[in-house]
Image (cartoon, rainbow, N blue to C red):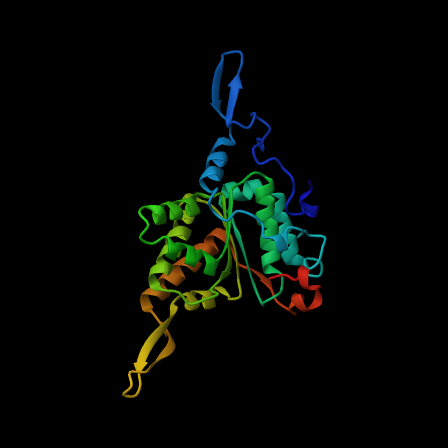
Length: 276
């Protein structure tokens, strides 16, 4: 299938060797010597099995996304061309550890383009984990205190071929969860594994947003024991440093973010076709 007309959710056999070298076992058999050696697809095959419990499917809303359909049609051509080039050279980009990130207003199609990249990686037989940042942070939180499951989760997120994170900076977080996010991104940075990400914030804004957290303070009122909650956003110096480290690594791994600004395309499309 041509990358230019890629439509997500194809019927490619996930067990087949993407290189056409082995029978799907991950080993190449030399019948002349009756020996077997690792196929070049074996590393990716192992990564896919380890990532099986991660969210690695294209959401239903984006399964028909392609370069030749709305909302991609009408997006800024330089950005679309950059994503096309990435998809055309996908295997090389993943091997280089080169990712991409898109920044812009709500409803400009950032997630659609990112899903096209993730879909192309799945079509090519790579392991992919796809999460919004709020969902990813909640997943990390839920694994706390369950034996070694948190370490196992962080390890799998670090080793998957492509990690797709949507809505970076979408919410305030705790210093602890921010440290876990940093550990994932840093592990991928150190091992040369790429990330595809979307955000509404430019790099400096994103770094600052990650350093903010919401505090809830219980304020007692009256003599009847009634109370109310006060919520306030505060900056945390240590978290701001972690936020800058995350953004610094993203810039080195992904280059400058691709900008998508303009009108909310959700208003221009039928309800079921609207982008994120």
